[in-house]
Structure formats: C-alpha cells, structure tokens
Image (cartoon, rainbow, N blue to C red):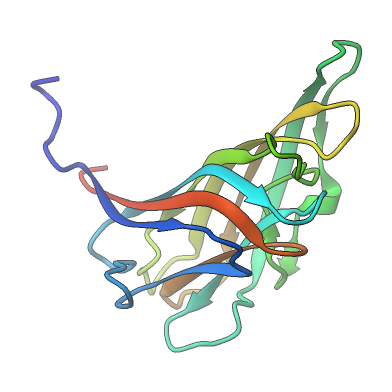
Length: 194
C-alpha cells in the first residue's frame, strides 16, 4: 500500500437517484469536473433500481457547446447469463445493443433490469480522455443486473465503443429506456497517473 500514488483516484461527484428521469454529469455544474484535469473518468453504479420492469440502463454524451445528448457512437456488446434454477446459461454477442454510427442512447444492459423490491444493477463505465480535440473518445463498461424474468437471471454485460467526434465531451447523461431511476447511486471519479 505504501507504493500507491496518493490521490490517483479522486471522487468528484456522488448522485443518489430518487425517481429521476435522467442523471446528468455536466462539467462546471454542481461541482462536476469532466475536462482535461483527468485522463480517465470512472462512473460507478451502485444498486440502480428502475421504476419500470425491463427498462434498459443507458447513457449518451454531449460535446462541449452542443446540445441534445446525440453524439455519434460505434459500439459492441456481449454478455453472459445464468438463471437461479441452474438450467440455462448463455455467452453471446448482443446485436440489439450495439451501434454503428448511431446517435441513440447506448445500452449498458443487454436485457432489462427487474423492478422487484430486491432487483438492481451495479457496475461501472470508463471514459478515456474526453477533453481531447484530436482523437475519438473511447469508453468501456461492465454491469451486472437481475433480468426482468420470472426465471430470475443474473446478466453480466460488457460494452465498449467510442464517441466518433474530435470535439471534447463534457457532459454525460444516464437514463432508463422507460420510466424513472427510482433509487441507486452513481459516483464519478477522476483517475490520474494512468
């Protein structure tokens, strides 16, 4: 532990959802830093609980000076799942969740989140060098959730891709594909020396 760099990972902002339609992190607003201060930004999702059964958990970015959360994304996704009955497992690519120069909100989940009292999603999203005005902006995420199925599945999803813009990305927004985010916490960290 004594060889670790002090302050290499810094908590920037923590937002707790309470029936929110969206949760946004905007550079320079409400103490959010999303600029050249850090080369990597990390969002952590803790027990995200939707109001609608089967809602997808999604995100999109906004370029500096832009509006609309509609940046062009190219992405890929695969997942593994396993049900409680121990009689069904899958490891598969998810074409319904990828984009090829799309401007939709990017899914972080392959199948919707259950909305039972004990159902939720947890995971993370990394955003690399969002302030660059030379390169596209890469992202990588991984989430695990209980699938909205009476068969009760755990679904482990992996997503990666890039915002196809050389403009700085200084806003990230999260939302469900339907309904609100009833509960849960999103933490934003900046990572230096990486």
